[in-house]
Image (cartoon, rainbow, N blue to C red; front, top):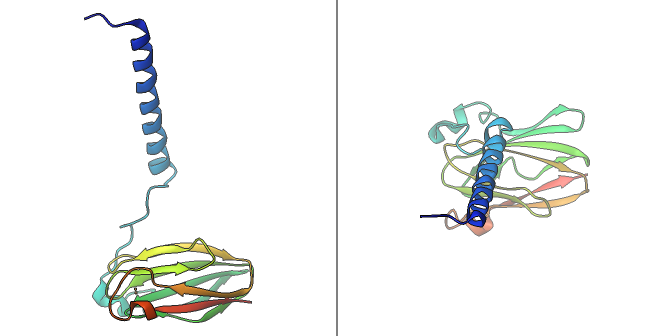
Length: 155
Ligand code: CUA
């Protein structure tokens, strides 16, 4: 079977494009470490209270306008809840669930994470604008799901 020259050219171009996409995706995922971060850090969900850093949930100042928030999510609350940080702070959240899958969504920001038992979720956000930010659980987690909320106050 004889192939037309145009056909060969277009086949080569489309194969080249596929290889290029695969190369970039692989490069981003492995060389730049941009692969989805799930399943990276695990924890025994039965022993969250005894496992560092979750044995001491809370807000820690770790630098000039930089905070670490170690938080557990459980039916139907966030621990710590209703905390404050100064405006301009960069906050590194370290999250895990003590029971079922919960959500961590902060209204008015891009923060939106799924928090699963057995996994440690890390997410960072800079809070520039003062105000009270509503924190919501956006994964259905049981009878009290719609009441599962707290706030972050930025001053
Ligand atoms: Cu926790 Cu919905």
